[in-house]
Length: 132
Image (spheres, rainbow, N blue to C red):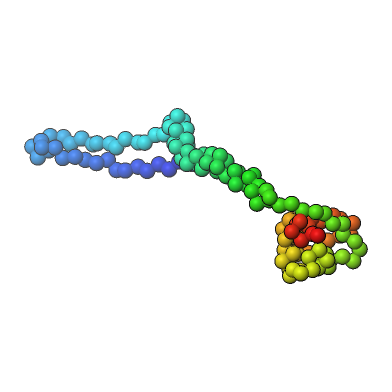
């Protein structure tokens, strides 16, 4: 840790007796020294907002993620993917009267799929509103 030392010139103060030949005296300014205890207190005061922010985010941040309210009332049936099946063909088969794009969106969100790629032999969940 480096320190900076600033030295100011001595300030001469003229007293009332200076005009009569009395001697003038030099007034020195005091140096500010920070002790080990002072450094610790300063560090604690500087870190307090950061600690308070972390504590707030830990206590209040996780409740929304763990609630699971979105999928609370969803019921589904599973379908085994056959070789050559696509999400479009499965959506057309399980819900012939509905737009396949809407059915595919529901299947992808229910199964947490990031793309439309599915593998033969895997089981995917189909919302019961589309299964007959």
